Length: 440
Image 1: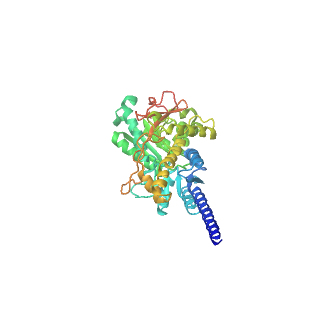
Image 2: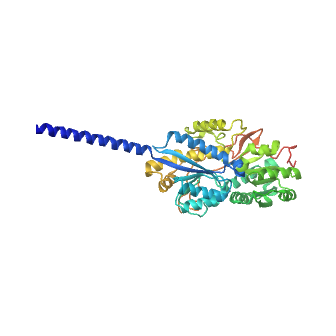
Image 3: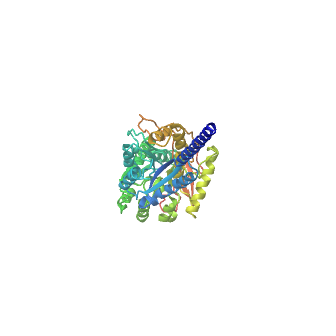
C-alpha cells in the first residue's frame, strides 16, 4: 500500500516537473520572439531639403525597413521609429537624442544633409550609441574625429568634386577643343558643410587638371536672391560651372541666370537637388536637359551583370514599391536607391553578423560587425564595395571602396557617362547650340 502511494507521488512529481519544463520552454520561446531592434530613422520630410532629395531617400530606406519588418533578422523583430528633421540641424540633433533617450531606439539611421550629419554624429558618438549614415557626404563628418560608433557606406564629398573635375579634364580637348589650362571653370557652392566639402574636391581636381579657375564663391542655400552671383559669373565667362546646391537654390540660380543671359558650356551638379530630376524639370522646364550630376549610381542604371546575383531581385522589388508609392515619375531618382541600398547593406550584412557573431544589437556589437564588413565591388546595389576605415585612421568609419558616377539628363532619361567602365552613352558636351544657356 505504501509502495503504491509512493509511486503515485513520484509520478505526480514527474508530471509537475515536466509541466514546469514545458512552461519554461514556452516562456523562453516567447522571450526569443520578443527580441527586437528599434531603429530610429531621421530624414527631412518637410522644409526645403525634403523636395531636394531627403524625402526620396526616406522612401528608399522605408521600403527596405518595411521588407525586413515582415521577415525579421536572425530571430529579431525590426521596429522602425521615424522622425522629421524639418530641414533644420538643431531639430535633427534634438530628434536623434529624443529617439535614443526617450524612444529607447538601439541606433539611428538616415540623415540627408551634411549640415545635420556633422553635429548629430558628434552627439551620437558622445552618447556612445550607433549611427548608420545612408546619405550625407561631407568629409567633415569623419575627418580626424576618431569616431568608434559612426559609419557611412556613402561616398564622401571630396570624391564628388574630384570626379566631376576629372570628367571634364578627360574631355577638354575632344569636346571643348581646349587644353585643360585654357579651360575657364567656376566653382560655386552653398556655404554649409556639404557645399564646402565638395568645393574642396573641386579645387583639388582643378589644380590637378591645371584648369583656369575664374571664380570660386559660396552663398547661403536660403538666400532669396542670387542675381549678384549670376553677375559675377557673367563677368567670369566660364566654360564650365561646377555647382553644389540643394533646391530651391538651384532653381533660383538657374532662373536668374536665364533672366540675365548667362551663357556657359556645361553645368556640373553634385548630388542633393541635382539628383531630383522631377524638381529640376518642374523649376526649369526644357532647360533641365543636358545637366550633369555626380551621385552614387542609380540602382536602376548599375551593371547587374557584374553584381552579386542576390541583388537584382531586391532592385526590382524597390522599383515596384516606389512606382506604387509615387506612380508616374519620369525618372526614378538615384536618391531612392541610395536610401534603399545603404539601408539594405546594414540590414543584410552588418545586423546579422552583430547578432550571430557578437551576441546582439548593442552599440559595440554593431560596431564590431560593421568593421568586419568586407564586400568587393559589385556587392552592393550601388555597384561599389564596402570596407570601412578602422580606428586610428583619419577617416575612421568611412567606406574606403565607395565612388560616385557622373550622369547626364537627356530626353527625360538619366544615363551614366563617366567613368568609362560604367558609361551607358557618350556625354553631350558642350551644350548644344540653340539651348538657353549655350555659349556656342
